[in-house]
Length: 272
Image (cartoon, rainbow, N blue to C red; front, top):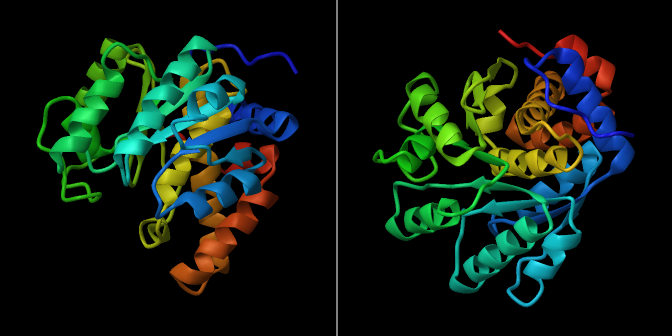
């Protein structure tokens, strides 16, 4: 399948085409992520159609990034050795033109990880930066949230997201009740998703992994980020109808991701 080229605006059919490409190519996604969510992130990627690899040690991270289709850098539980591996993976990704995603978990709330996030942005160009509103505001110089919880609304982060996207030539994806994504010029909103996504561990972190997977098969990073967001949130809407609570929802979400077809995604996604 030829690469999907950037479009002026993101339409539902673009998201369906992206999901079809993910299923056809099953990209290898290197995840340097936090210890709380590694298993769930791997299962989300597998259910969606990608191939996860949790290679997060300094000895292998750089070389593996060169063969991966996409790389996730997630700052949820940073340690000195894993952050060394993250820096190495970024080098490997950029040397081989591999798409990589930065997820600045709890940035602004904690000083060390905030400095790491700025370090990873300084002189580098992630394909996508994904976070909640407080994390995105913190990257732009704000105070951040309460740990991983956002104290700001998505609407409050619109300006910071556009500024960051333009300054770093990247796509910034702000997760919330209505997700907002921008490359500094274009923007898209996605209004799918269910409250249960906030009641299980790892949905946002897994979304970062999905974005890396879609960025491996879609040239337009805004379309890739939107397709990942739509895939997860539409699947969540379907799963919530089957679930009795957060526990059964987490299982149903994996089933829904596996069952979701490109056509169903096109018909169900809400782009207000």
